[in-house]
Length: 467
Ligand SMILES: [Ca+2]
Ligand SMILES: [Ca+2]
Image 1 (cartoon, rainbow, N blue to C red):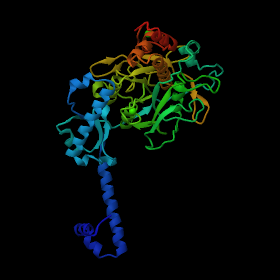
Image 2 (cartoon, protein in one colour):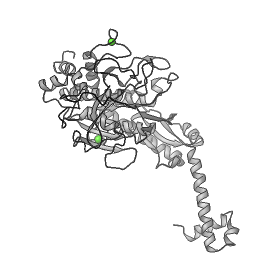
Image 3 (tube, rainbow, N blue to C red):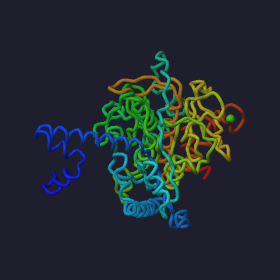
Image 4 (cartoon, rainbow, N blue to C red):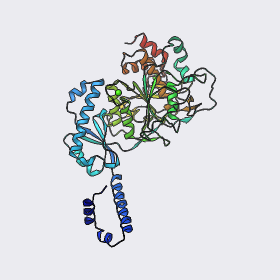
């Protein structure tokens, strides 16, 4: 509310004051409203010129940072980032609120903040002594759009063909207690139908990045529900659709009806998976994060350490989290991977069909970075005509590497339950070593190390034959 003194100063300094005093009270009000609208429009214009940047702070003790892992690393990064953030706001208070948001957002996992900056403020921030550099994170990423699966795909067996390929019927017989219980799997996707009979009661946390604050799980396009079904779905229909029906899911809804999202929200969603309740002292983060999205484009002008998503995946590994990513549906050409599936720290999955042939659409390696070619994908899994859950009940077939990745996330969950003492990296190594070699002998850029075998992977860690 304006007090009288301030009101009079505003009028005295207003360039339109003569007009104000020569008009009636009603006209004065209209004029003021016009001025406010004009100023708002000008401010909006200025804000439109902002773009999201990663403000990367200088690390105070690089040696200490490299020596830390797990919760100690998390604590160190949070404290350091918080200190830098308060220094940033002290030095340049105007940074807070630029671009119309509530202020800068902490991306502590990278010792960074996300800030909306215009050219002028970006220049100022980059010159602060505690800022290492600014990285633009403008742009979007999209769900890896599935192909509609064959509606005539057989639907009478007790397991989907994908689960049969992995060896799940025998696994369930030999290890009936293995269902992923006690393991937390994160899914960054289009949300979920939380009331689907095969998924009900399995959501530990849900966060809506599309409509912040919305508590009710939703999924407009069905992609996230399908992925969740392959990881955690039960068998209420009489057929098992999920690899690990006992897991608890941590759902980040980042993709709305358009299937596209800002990179900023995706970085924040990956970070949220580490500490969903916002309390670092409670260990409630995801052990595995399943991702069926990415962005496609040339990235041979940079190296992974300069790509924020690759840097986040590297930190997730240091926190003992497996980031599983779909390779992309841009095959069959070589070098067609999406980011983050192309990042060295991604556990990247291509798609096969019911005859163990590569899906034509499955993206192939290598990941062509500026100074290195990274061999990808790591493995393949069933991804053609996969039947899984559909929003509002029921089931539907979909095809894509989006459908292959959750099979692998589910297998990792079973392994984590069987051997919680092993690191995620150990479990991935076991998945690789026990996969079925396809295509040319040994590793190739089409099938990776091979098509995943759940039963063999479990046997290898339980018997510790490779550790
Ligand atoms: Ca926590
Ligand atoms: Ca091979």
